[in-house]
Length: 92
Image (cartoon, rainbow, N blue to C red; front, side):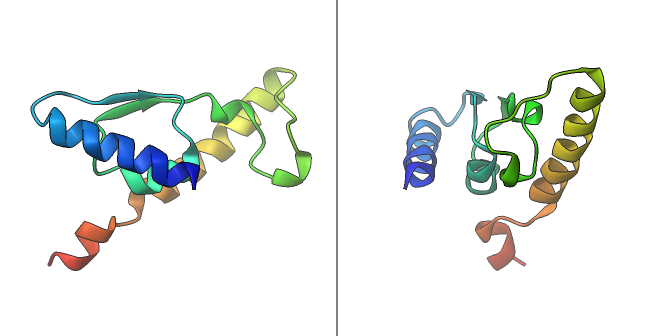
């Protein structure tokens, strides 16, 4: 539900500010799938968390973990950004 609130908020912002760049702070990775075609840029600190949800709210504790978490996050981000949006999928 909160992802749909995020989507609706940015969709409304885009509608009201069509000629402005939309930069989002603290975007949830799950919401990125929905809003990547609406926003222009984003900042996120999710890469400091493990990709594996079994680790709960663990955060990186040292340089090695920061590098490992960041590489895993970049892989996940690339996967999300390479997926077509619904609009892209129906347009040919």
